[in-house]
Length: 222
Image 1 (cartoon, one colour):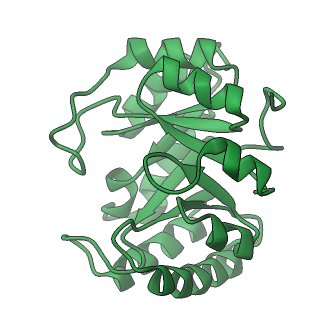
Image 2 (cartoon, rainbow, N blue to C red; image 1 turned 90 degrees about the vertical axis):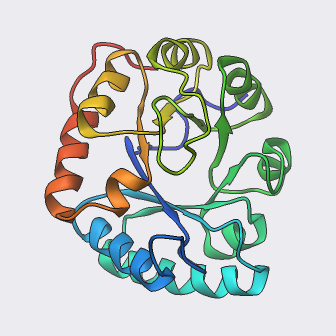
Image 3 (cartoon, rainbow, N blue to C red; image 1 turned 60 degrees about the vertical axis):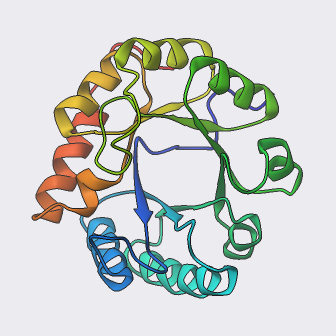
């Protein structure tokens, strides 16, 4: 079982840089990378690189280039890589497990600097913690544009996961700054955000709004 506090100084705001290698329907890959770098410059402390449709070589090249840019923007930025354990290890980044890629136990055994897991229930969050995960994302809390077919869980299941997993739980799905504040109030460690940050018109203002929301004392800490 990992230290319940997780890795040192685990940030409360995570940007999911989805489509950074081959792009998304709404954004070219170059735009995702540009916006991600601008958000890190604006204060976003943690980024996970996600692009499940990218071929391994393209993913690795794009991850190396973006990691270099993000570390130039902020040498202290925390990086994670979704599913691609080899890329994570090569970059000295954390790895985020879920439906794709290694299991939590495999990532822990490989020596990843941090291991996260995509949970959709309190049971999955507790199982990930038992297997050695340092944190989990819990989704979808609210309706989300990236997975419109998914039924939102709401705040009560998020709060249950936060109370029982004994590792930090990040709310994911349909997050806005006010909703991130609500997530903190029910016990979430913080927020993982995709569309709410990537599609922001004003990166510095939006980043600050999210940071203010998640950094407020919630009165309940996982």
